[in-house]
View 1 (spheres, rainbow, N blue to C red):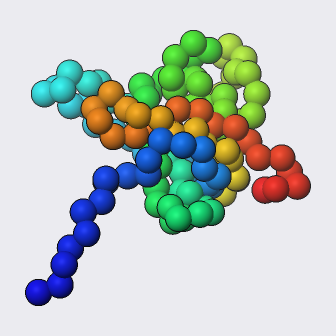
View 2 (cartoon, rainbow, N blue to C red):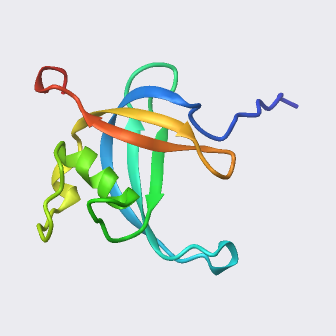
Length: 121
């Protein structure tokens, strides 16, 4: 029988570059007392974790002060304006610097998203 290697289940905390692959709806989880949300997905594109997904689940509606708004602001590369409408799918494939930090439940999550300069996209 071949040996199995146990992984941490995700990319460790640190800074990575990666591409935005979109958002997906996350259903509510009453057992954990979480409402419905959005999963912001990125794929690491350089280094030993190349090809691995990193993500962040936020509430479904952005504001200038919440985590959904923070992720959207990072993806578009500027501050949000009240009442504007933004389609995050228009940013799929763009390259970002991703700051991954320890999550509340022991894993990791994307904490910050910073657009890469055009020369490095």
